[in-house]
Image 1 (spheres, rainbow, N blue to C red):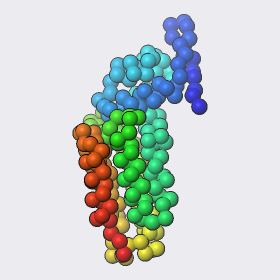
Image 2 (cartoon, helix red, strand yellow; image 1 turned 135 degrees about the vertical axis):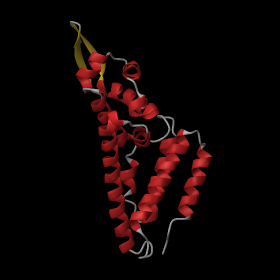
Image 3 (cartoon, rainbow, N blue to C red; image 1 turned 180 degrees about the vertical axis):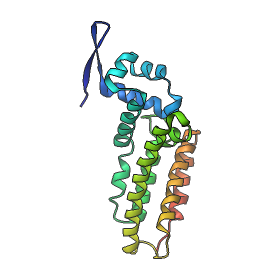
Image 4 (cartoon, helix red, strand yellow; image 1 turned 180 degrees about the horizontal axis):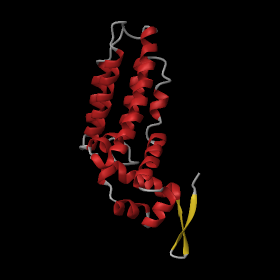
Length: 203
């Protein structure tokens, strides 16, 4: 449901759709990262003035956090569905297929917002980097918990290093995002997905 707001600018109200403006901001951050996105980039894409941005969203950091929430709810929702798969391999396949669809769809920039915004963060944006890393850690711990259950259920051998396996999976998923951002084709990413699934440990 779209949300509209009226912000008083120089004596007269300016009305705009907050949801539409936030979606536009997300596209800018996703394409350029946190530090790469200038306030001019953001206000032009959002179709609002700086005072309107500050009044509706707070500062740039607050806007990015809201955009990151939107990114996780709209673009990364498949990760929550993946955890519900009945087997560990099913979890991985859903994650990879979801990531593939995300990277090859027409609905946004390529690459991973989290990767882009942490790799390119300098000292002035350490708070943003810490935020992204903390959210990623939460996802990592959820996967570790799921794979320990899978190991107990006999999905793969008891000698499998669950923590190392999750780190390997994250490296593959992030690598796919980086490759997509560098122009890799859907066929290239599908090949990478297929190889990773063939190498997945079984009993």
